[in-house]
Length: 83
Image (cartoon, rainbow, N blue to C red; front, top):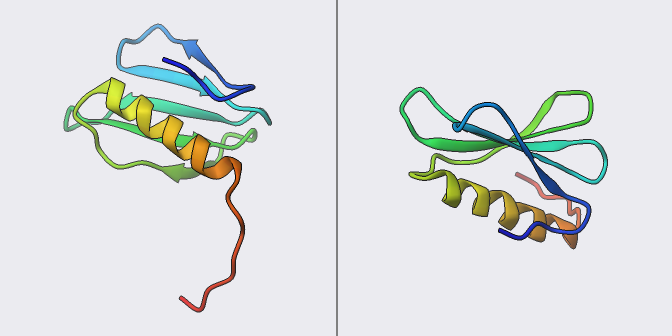
């Protein structure tokens, strides 16, 4: 699996949890929820959850979800909307 520049997987003791360290000290966490599905959350460097992903059937697909968010956010613009 390839990771965007300045990001790398951090292996943890659990097969149900993977951390991916980001550029600014934040990190993605991939974990297995109570229903047995895999999810990811993005935590800021202060530990606050700033984004969460949907439920995925496999860890590999959840990791691809992290990669997708990282790619999309790299060039994303901030826009103001009415809703």
